[in-house]
Amino acid sequence: MAVLLLAELNGADLAVDATAKAVTAAKALGDVTVLCASSGCSGAADAAAKIDGVAKVLCADDAAYGNGLAEPIADLVVSLAGDYEHIVAPATNSAKNILPRVAAMLDAMVITDATAVVDGNTFERPIYAGNAIQTVQSSDAKKVVSFRTANFDAAGEGGSATVQSIAAAANPGLSSWVEDKVAASDRPELTSAGIVVSGGRGVGSEESFAIIEQLADKLGAAVGASRAAVDSGYAPNDWQVGQTGKVVAPDLYVAVGISGAIQHLAGMKDSKIIVAINKDEEAPIFQVADFGLVADLFDVVPDLTEKLG
Image (cartoon, rainbow, N blue to C red; front, side, top):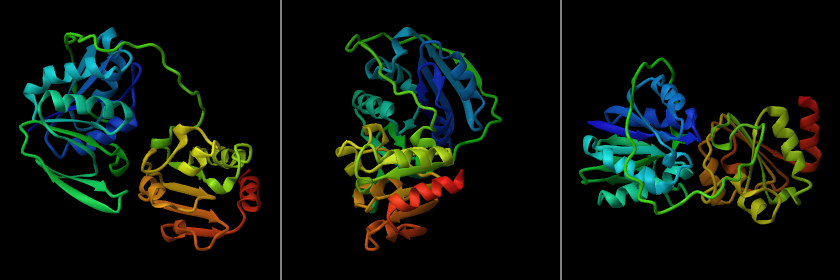
């Protein structure tokens, strides 16, 4: 069976972590061809060719794909679909925008956030905020699947796949790019960070959230937040971890002032080590934590940050 994997790109650059984790998942389905579609994406294609398990890389270098618009990229994927039984991608914001359109054009179902491959037709995915695992079997001729990358290890380097330049498909002209507003940060990207420090409603204010950021910076970590903290204006939307935010599975997750609502746990319970700091000893977060500290965060977090210094 042949697999077409839509690579995750940041502009013209390959998002190596997300793509390599999707390669790990896709290898269980057959020979993996990676599609890089952007403007000036030859460097991304070369990087994808080095991922272990990639058999071939297709590079569609065209201005129409430069801003990640779903419509032209979906048309490109559909134009290539005849050679592949599976069309897959990491479950990122970009792919979640593109794959449903691909599936509709192919008259197929889309299987989102797959966490395991049972066989070529059958996949597992979480439901009910991660409290149950659904097994989904598709009889479609083309299977369209996004993989939750937090559940897969990144494929290593060492590959030497061939890179083939391909022509752009006809642009449907259904959308146009206006502008991108990207927040610059020296911290690791939240979904791929090895360490995440998250704050919740207990932090109390946007000003007090600085102590979460200071601890994260000491640990070289990404900063996360619960939905309650985001809704209260303590942290920006792109820091939100949970069912309606980002799903993370770092080596270390530090939850500060987070009670542990089921929606938040759905976004971080697969973390390898979970540390919880909360003054409420009955907080649900302690039920999933590997290490818990019942204490006032305003006392212990600055002290911890100082000792790490």
